[in-house]
Length: 65
Image (cartoon, rainbow, N blue to C red; front, side):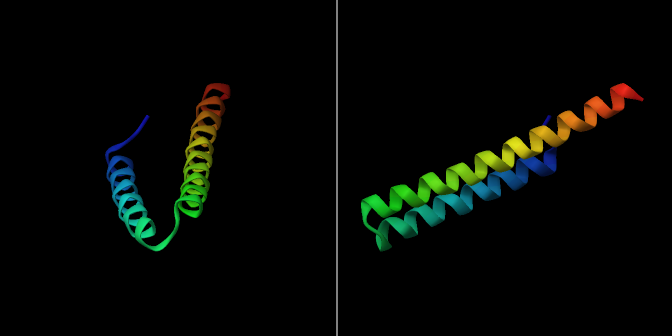
């Protein structure tokens, strides 16, 4: 479940990521740019999975009580 504040935060993160991609396309060659983008995508995915795990844990703890 995504709440309003998280939507704004995710949109801001997307906008920042887009701006960084534009800047790195000017500064770096294609291979390094792809490696950095892949690394950042992995970080974002790990953060999303961590949020999902925390939410699942909260739901399970509420169900046990």
